[in-house]
Length: 76
Image (tube, rainbow, N blue to C red; front, side):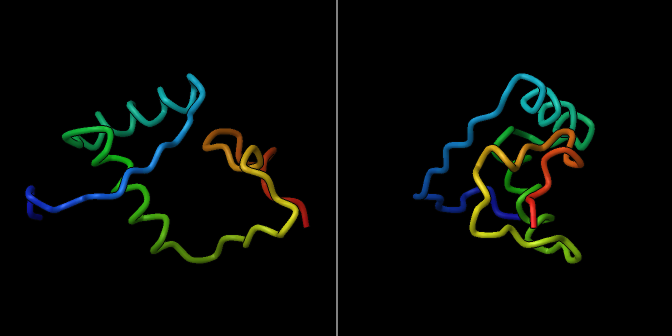
């Protein structure tokens, strides 16, 4: 993987303390070089995944946390 990839787009993601800790724990377990690299890897894996429900039009951002997913799945 090239280290000199141009990345002109910025994405801000807000996490609560538990989500932030989960991200850092995963990052260190996988020996990822940075939080940004960890988030890109998780996005890559998520985009390649199959078998998940699609969000309905009444879903809100708060419906999609990274912890306790059973309680936060979109209704529908």
